[in-house]
Length: 79
Figure 1 (cartoon, rainbow, N blue to C red):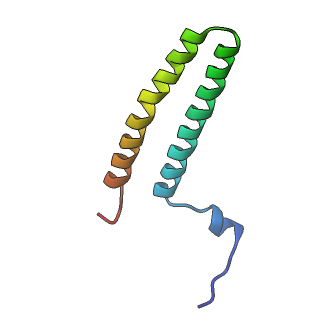
Figure 2 (cartoon, one colour; figure 1 turned 120 degrees about the horizontal axis):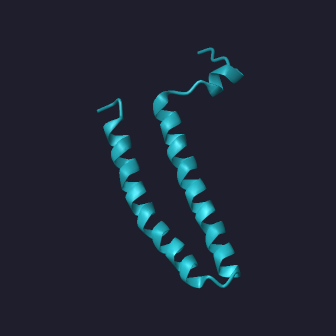
């Protein structure tokens, strides 16, 4: 088997893979942004607001994870 490796072959992804990358990057941005916001609020002695940000993230992440799994199962081309 003769396989050619090229930059265009690496960058050409299916919509399912792009959606997966979008979910992972989106979750990462949410988590890192929430952690930075929580740290800044805690530095400014706004502990109540920092705890509220942490609580919102603790609620959003499991819901987002379950929604991502449902999206993956429904958009799976093998089913």
